[in-house]
Amino acid sequence: MRQAPPAARCFGRFRRSGSQARDLVDARAMQRTRATRSDESARCRHPAVHLPVDPTMLRSSCRGRSSPVSDSVSRFYICIYVALAIALTACSVLPTDSTLPLGAYAARPESVALANPEQTKLGQQIEPRVREHAGISGFRLISSGVACFRARMEMAALAEKTLDVQYFAIQSDDTGRLFIQGLLDAADRGVRVRILLDDSNAVGRDAEIGALTAHPNIELRVFNPFSYRGPLEFMRAAEFALNEKRLTYRMHNKLFVVDNEIALTGGR
Image (cartoon, rainbow, N blue to C red; front, side, top):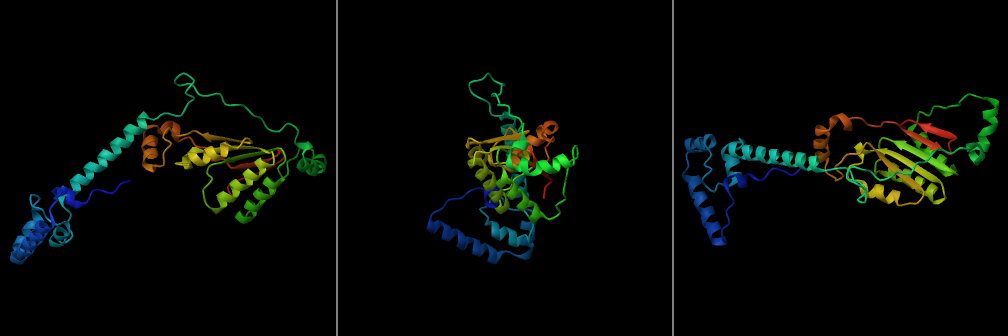
């Protein structure tokens, strides 16, 4: 959000030449010399907004008190910013295919999970245990975040056919970049990578999302997207306030599935 305008704007903008500026400074110095304590108190109670007062001199003479004019103008600008954000948010709509009628969305290709996971190398390794414990799912708890991240990277490296990823947020930090690199490496090997990402933490990241979807083996969908696609957080906040009933419905699931055979769930 932009900062409020300097206090000097509250008293008007004055443009003077170099000599005029020096004369003005000398006049102010004489005025400060002749001023009495009672005059300073009067200026604190009644700022002389009709004079070209230096903002720093006003703050020092008023002993830290803010100008009523400055406060009112600041509140005015804040109201203008909020109103503008609401207006722009109300005018924004979700992107659609320009070739379709207004309100109609482009066709989204349907895809399903791998039908025969036992035919993959990972499935062949697990199949003996599956037959031994028919009808029972095996699981293991991983309490360490480092161990869990390492497991994801190893699972991505083992993916042969499909890799399904579902997360609330993928940040652009070191861990997030390593994670995305693992997905790209799998896609480069011919693995079909499907990503479902909640839009609440994807503000201003449409370029990154577009770069991922440009890969022929990556499908990425954003869950319950905001209409505003720009980088400004307060614009999304304004849209959320206007459309809270829909936008409060978020996806907090965390899932990482390799070849429809082995999965890792949770946020660690």
